[in-house]
Image (cartoon, rainbow, N blue to C red; front, side, top):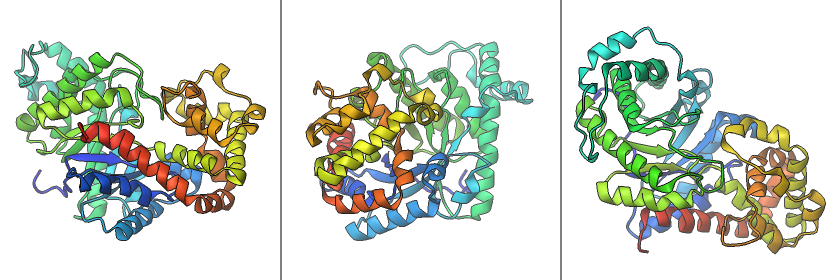
Amino acid sequence: MSEAPVLELGKYSLGVGDRFAHQAKAQLAACAKAAALGVTVIPVWNKSNREHNVVGSEPESVRKAADEAVRQLGWKQPYHVDADHINLASVDRYLESSDFFTIDVASAIGQRSDCVDAFVARHPELTGKPRIDGIDEPPSITREQVAAIADKYLHAAEEAGRIYRHIAQQRQGRQFVTEVSMDETDAPQTPVELLVILAALADEKLPLQTIAPKFTGRFNKGVDYVGNIARFEKEFDDDVAVIAHAIGEYNLPSKLKLSVHSGSDKFSIYGPIRRVLQKTGAGVHVKTAGTTWLEELIGLAEAGGPALRLAQEIYAEAYDHREALCEPYAAVIDIDVRRLPSPDEVRLWTSGQYVDALRHDQTNPSYNRALRQLLHVGYKIAAKMGDRYFRMLEECAEPISRNVTYNLFERHICPLFLAGR
């Protein structure tokens, strides 16, 4: 693996999505606040192919916004631009502007590989009770179980290898971070499955920096985690132990770490994640992609006047087109339409009422989880407004940037990485 074009990712990193490429400086300011307190959190600006297509942007816009924010704030630490959730069909448009590639192979899970028997024969160490430091009760794994797991995941690992090699060939020695994503699927991967997956990815010679499995529970967009928190903590702890074991067993990169996708606003599991990191010394990558767009809306609402009316109009359009907006995100949202206020009601709201309904403060009785999820997927409405929306972002830059920085630092970075602050 030493010959691979590896770009090492920092111990703690945060995926900071920005639908409209206006908040990079405000996002970076949150990382700068952490750095001033002695904790380096590497920003990774990410925007998926779907989001580029919806907004009508190109990957170069993300690189330009990130570079300009770094220049303005004098950021001296590393930073990255992520080609988020790419595959062979979409990756080429990112090759020049990105240096972080999230290889999404969830759609390949369950497809048959012709190499299952050879994989099982090559990995006798997976059967029996492999001793994994950090897991008190070693899992008992039969040869048949290894074969069944490989039957489900081996083709996906092979596809990740094909995509990685394509990127490496096209970039001709230019370094990049490699992440493999298997989170957008129905069933979570157990720690035993993760071990088999890592063995398969090692066989593909991937210089893996992060891996995004699907965890137990629901990771709906922009709202808190739904599930058994104690079970999640044990699973996360076991996955960290599995990764440490696989690093030694399969010569994977020493800084390999877990990635938590749809990690924005998962407030109830930030404490468990932090405890595991403190106990083990592991790192983590957390993606907080959609949070910034919602903070833009909050900033517009706070500004009042025409900006509030624009935010109200966006909600009305999202409400009227809710089925089409929600369909692509059906697996990662859970909206109770009975909880959605009518557009006529929202048009009468004050700034405070709009902000209280949208801001993710579960102690506020006016917080509306259904409204927040609908607006989360409603960025297409703002995209169609084009310059009209962008001009309002410029006019309301102060309240928007203040909300973006506060939310990212106080509500994400601090509970994850700055315990006891």
